Image 1 (tube, rainbow over the protein chains, first blue to last red):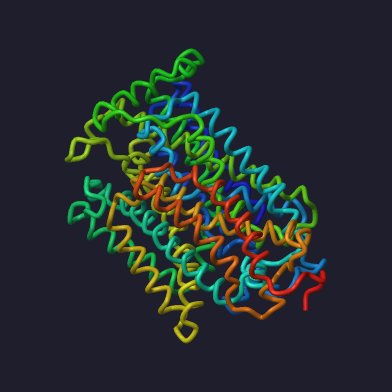
Image 2 (image 1 turned 90 degrees about the vertical axis):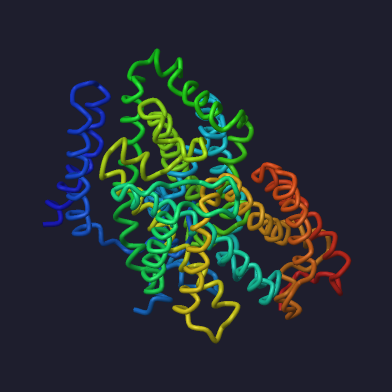
Length: 65
Length: 474
């Protein structure tokens, strides 16, 4: 299950990065990029919590800029 | 597991980190990979463009500045962190005394509230996009935005504060999960913006007309302005001054097994403070080219609205990203500010103090000039907190060579080491006068203050320490 979730996370991340690269290359239109990115976003937050349950980093309570 | 000891950073707060708890390089690279891609990046990137930085200066200046920041972590912070293996606060307590550390922590907390306030504004800017609520930046520094936006800030601030009062753990886990996605969205924003401006080939990219046109537009509306190469270098180097020059990251690197862990901030710097800043700046340039009317406020000046910028490039994903980036930055910031306030009033509950911090942050967030002047605020933050790192540096490397006692407060039991107090407050007060009254570029003040503080600490210690060092600590 975890391996499947990891693979899905990778696919959903690609759904963010690949369509915009295709838009850059002139292969697809922007509305399609936005739609695929939204589905990728939803997918990322569904699949990633399944496997990314690692311990909090040691600076979890620290402040970043 | 209680909240206070649920993270590794909460352990060994008053003792050196033992061999068994130390971590390999991979942990630090993994941790810093998700760092520095935060809500602030959506504000800082466009501000470079709005300030008039040229594209070549930005690309090279950020490269050099971030490199200097990484070197500072590696060669300033890590050797002390690995030698002492103590948190910043415990080391400071041993040098400066418990009461002075509480005061330092209070100052820290107040600055955190303003930083969180800027992030509340950033999140509200994104929440307002679907409701067509505009983000106006008034000319008067203490002016409010339009009533709808101010109400939105109050609602967003209340939600963030309520979540922070429940503890940082869930949000920290969520931020951990969101980090890789957020970096991908930043990259996507930059790529889409370049495409929208027609900068899709090497000649258009190297010519940089898309950038110079955007600057010309901003300067036509906002008046002329420049942001030089060295300002970019120094800002990129010192915007995290509190973490490296200020030694805040001693708390992290005390767990390092090897000094080479000190290179790990490079991944955070070059993803967050290079790629993400440039991508965020490109968002503003693209919107200026495509729909210039959307970036001009009621006062006729160009305003960077992070939510709107991201929405125009990547749609709802952009709005979600700005909300999450602002929220996951504001949340631990308010939580840490609450802890700092609780340190001053030990009888108060952490929840109550977090709510106080949240109210202060929300009030600060209602003044949009705070986020609109984030470059100055971040520089000031580095100046105030970064300066204290000189005390730790001098105490570690130099003080015994001058026949003085290291960790003087621990030796004498003093609650306030006056040498530390004066050597910190004096240069910072002078710097704040020049920054606030004379308009001095805040990031330029960090290094002069740091050196002045170190020299003063040595000189005043020479005058105030009661007996010569015997090299031991009682």
